[in-house]
Amino acid sequence: MITKLTFITTVAILPLLIGCNSSSSTSSNVKPQVEQVFRSACSIPMQGDTPLTFTVEEDTAKVSGVVCEGSPAAFSKMLAVHTSLKTLSLVNIDGSADDNANLQLGQLIRKSKMTTSIGKTGHIASGGTDLYLAGTKRKWAEGAKIGVHSWSDGVNDGSHFPMSSPEHKPYLDYYKEMGIPESFYWFTLNAASASGMHYMTYDEIKQYGMVTEQLDALGITPVPASLSSRYTKALNFDRYTSLQAPNGKLIHIISQDKLTNNQIVRARSVLSHYLTNYTSSEYGNDKSAVTNKMADNGAILLLLNGSDDGTNPASELDGQPLYQNEIQVEGGQWYLSQDYDHRDATFEEILHMVHDYGIGVDQNESFLGALPAYQDEIRSAQVTALTQKIWGVGDENQNWIQELTQENSLSQEYLAAVVDSYYGLWGAWNVSEASESSSNSSDSQKGMWGIYMAKTRAEVAVEDPLGLMLMSKFFPPYLMYNARIDESFDGKFSLKFNSSKPYTNHSRYLKDITLTGSNDSDVVVNELDNVIMGNSGDNMIIFSGDVDSYTITMISNRRYVIKDNQAGRDGRVTVQDVEILKFNNFIKVL
Image (cartoon, rainbow, N blue to C red; front, side, top):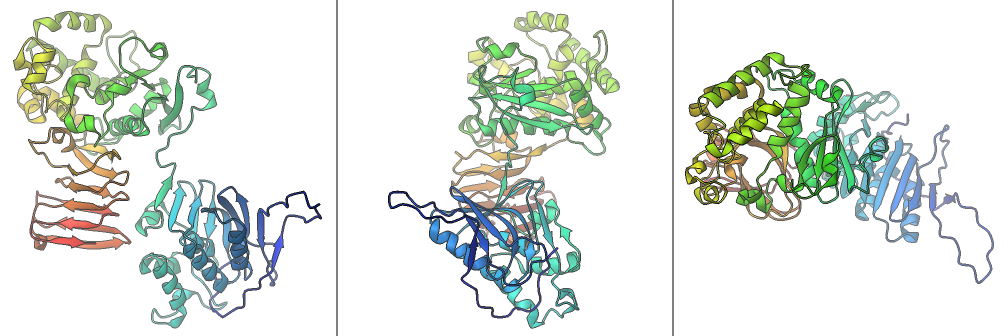
């Protein structure tokens, strides 16, 4: 492993280049071959290491090797030949044999406004990490290794020098130029000795603002070969994602071609929410058995084009169907208006899959789930709700109840009604919508099309206390996923309930959100200790009180924690990549 050198000296950059393309004479009517490979000319012995090499493919150069004094010249020559180059894909860079050259190269990369990128099998360390930080945009895929350690003068590590020592200045100046907090430099000195290497954790990478865009952050891929013979392109299946169970098996999510990526992510997020541990709850404290059962039982979520109208042939395939016109995305127009002409069935349909394949259903030939005791309680609450006309009410619904009885689906449909109301999915349903879909306008005061007596969490507590108890034993009180606010959103997104904004019946239970796209968007916080990620537009976060009642702490570059010192109001809010904090009496520009 090549380590950083201590002494930064003025070294003349040799304008030499050893190209890997062989040259040959050409006739006047043959176009010369454009050079694609650029290798650094190194005058010092490389001890078996490969000099830093740039290999150009269209608008990207793949970069591997060790930086030496000829690396800036190689980079400059490459840019002179390939003027449209945009991205440096860092494949494997162990470090630098010349720190002066490494810092010069980093400055050239920044001056050229390059994007640096490292894929999931990529490896950078020491000076290679410094080059990555030179990108104006820095892309990273989970699994890529980023190594840091102290430099050494051959006798002492950098951590042995006083903080006031001039030896630190070139590095501190460099990180300042790259917009990286000074704390990162001191972190590298103490993370590992010059003879060792510390590979940064995900939290450390985030803490120091090293990544501006996570590659494949959505986790959506083409349908894998193991599934594509059944879920075919001819049936319009084109994308895939999954959740991995603790036993290593996958719960597959397979999508047709008309769904948006945000819809796919939303479906996966809701599934993840149901399967995330709810600490201190009776049955949800450790959900690994439920998740393992789902994978063992072959649970598959099918995201299908259109609506559930019987016209999609893929609905006959194995899997729990959820249709395009049943999946809202936070911040989308349908979500904001809460249009019940085609309601959000995401929570209901995915819960059916979790119930059938993971929790388990009684009164079948065998019990396939992991929580028979919980299902006993669900069944008891369902029987009580049906008997006492809390759920399944209305003469017009009795044929449906008979069908559910024959299918042994009563407990699943009852639990879904409770969950929908518990998370605010029916809170905005009003009289005019009820009168169009029901013979009784008073149904607007109920949930699930008037079938369930409660349409809000507060009403569940009054009308169905057994249902509320079921929630507390498995389902967390807020949504456990980070919601991606649709890129079309433009305005003020509220996490706090506001009776004039129908969607806040549901958004009040969101804790963490990520603004996407480039529109200037603002966020009103709630009491749930929010984590809010900004987008590429200008974002303002809006608080409830005067600025003096909050403590504002900068954690790292572009990341702040704002703690409300008044209990029960705005909690502890973490923001990343936002521009403005708005208080009742003050606007703070970050």
